[in-house]
Length: 460
Image (cartoon, rainbow, N blue to C red):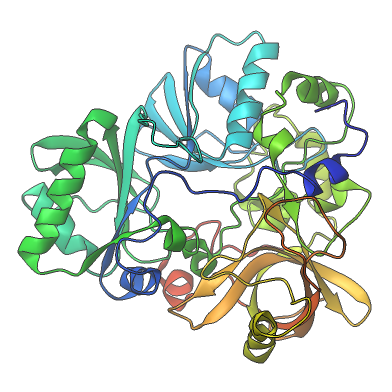
């Protein structure tokens, strides 16, 4: 990867195709009702396949992870989870994972590949007394081959979720605080449960040995049938849109393509088939400087849990300087209905249409960057988009300059400005779509009922 002369061109012309949520069926009923159910009844998310899992254990495990991530570890005991975020020495976000502490000397990290890769590299170049076991996400296109993971991972959420948990537990479940972990029963299995909710509704995420997957799923589904609860299994089409209502940007471009020293060594270490080398940048924003796509923790709303009291961690000096800088802020963009319909209508007319807006998920690259304009000035970047049947509109998450205010109407440029070689983008014209700057999280349930977290803290 480090031999490529222009990383922007490498990523904009990648032919890897669409970013796929693997193995799980696209739909179990239909994606509209599956989205509706996390707001009105209950849903079952199968999260077993689309995330990497990295086990870190050994006598130096805590010290090592505290060095790699920005998080404070002073209050991290075995009944807690954290949103683990590493940055480069320049303070650019690499990615994020959810980290669980299973023992004093054992942690499990779950999420996208960039954070797992960076953590493995830091263990390889350091002298830490740690052991790492990496279970990469399932293949995007298994082509009929059997897929096995170390753990299954399910999440049940929605207003009717508590009834299901009480049924499968055989009685009332513990009152688990947000991002805390406890044990519950699922039939005759004892499983760990994280208090979590991707779209803001009540929910728990459970996991255990992959060999138990079928039993766990069938027990949950039978409990819902016995209760008469409308529990919907959510397919991969709807699953990826739930973050739009809750305000998490899942795929910022890893800030690893620039920098000397450690960063050059890291790029040499990464394989040609790695996420970072094979991924794609899509969208209307094209720049020769790839660092213009990077974001820092303050822009994503992660600044409040930086462990400033730690002696040292990667990127601390850079973040100290960025803390009081005029950083951008995270917002939700609400796409104008008439403009969206204009883009869709072009697909039914002669000539070159506008870039197609797929439903419910228009993203066509690993990372997205669409220009958000105020007149002739670029004031923001739209980074993850999708349609919400619950809100009846297309939404996207992104960052804007501090001068932008909630309620402002801006213009987003939709579609590629040039002929890229990416296979996921058809020949098309660019369109201008008005977007209203809206709160983050967008869903009122998430804004009002989440405990304090990265979703509800101020992002400035």
